[in-house]
Length: 568
Image (tube, rainbow, N blue to C red; front, side, top):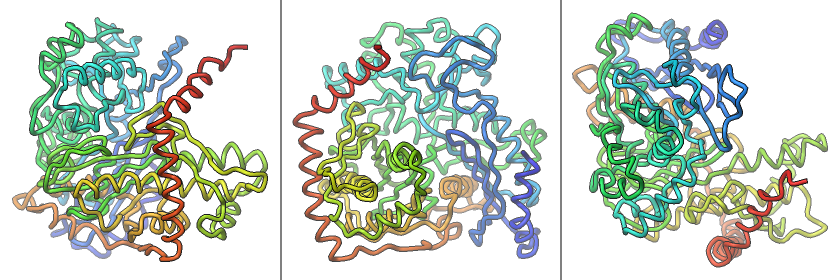
């Protein structure tokens, strides 16, 4: 695996050696821990050139059926990971990229991770599942962000918070997700009390990686704020609230790290032990961790108000910055200094975008043997509105603004004339309409948005990008880097280094040096805008009717499907 990664590095290695004075060059490293793999990206801090990149898949991947070495089925909705995969993968990608440049020229390191991906550990950082007595208990393993088995706990947290009128709820659009820290901790307390009692710290995986690098425990403001119910105004949930949930949670706050450090601020330096293992230089500054999607904001070059950064892949994350705190409906979380220092960072999202297109291609086109590219070309030949369809993009629920995971998707307007290309184009338009609903919530609250800056796999599709521009009536700028998330982490690492270590004083300075202008800009077409304005109003009516007024029509269908599946 390492040999294959090095083979990919050769062109970049040659570039670095031929065009850089290694005596004065300065580099930053981003470590990007995704759902399936870890990626290392090295950036030249002066030119923004991507010097080296390496990717390593996790050996155990996402664990959903049984624990390794076990035949005992895991409960429904479990999604676990092996923490050793993170360490082994990181060792391999570091070994690969460190062959491309001298480690002494590395000024700073940033880390991003999926969230809330958390694990129970001992005080010295040892994961509980590494101890023989807890190896076979799934609650002692890493609970990945998409572990959804804590939904009953999340439901009770939401209900009690509303009953008590808890102030923290308004910072999360009124709904706490089963993916977040508190529901997962409570799930462990209820279903594995031995694991809960033995746990010294429940830690976000990104913070655990930083601890492995630096020997220092810190809690990053990004994960703590968006997934851990902390914010600068209120702190953590009150002790009385936790006890009202369950007396077992009386000591839970003692099991959470409370020394909050913002991304871009230094969490520590590379230890002698980690340097000996990897070849990194002792004392290299390491930034506080951040969430992977949020790292994409500086990675696409956004550090100002007025621009929405959207990370577009299987799902979409929308990040908007504001100097002022505004409370309104439509976001999943807001945190001061959670994304970029000096700003309140807002997060919204669509829980399925690329997944929807992939679902349609896999289940409806592949059986017929039709190439997906041919479908996309035919869809591009259609005029806006020509399909006669409106799609509600809730195939995996609605994250924003309705915050209802139980909703399901819909196609309105089907006739015997409807063709695959009509449906596919309607699905793209539906995802763009969903984004417009989200962005309008911000503008109506007084937060201006005048452009989109996007990154992710979907940005390579010109049809999708043009439809988004036409629907939203905004220019859509495609970020230059295909590794925007890892680039964002490298930027945070260079910022954490500070001028005293050859780094940067401000985020704006780091972004100016380390990112490049957009590679493409899509401008809205006036005629398409007019048609989409009409179509969007039809979408809005469907959105409000099935998402607000008659929610039971959607949720009952989903419940019936669950009840009857496998009944015969």
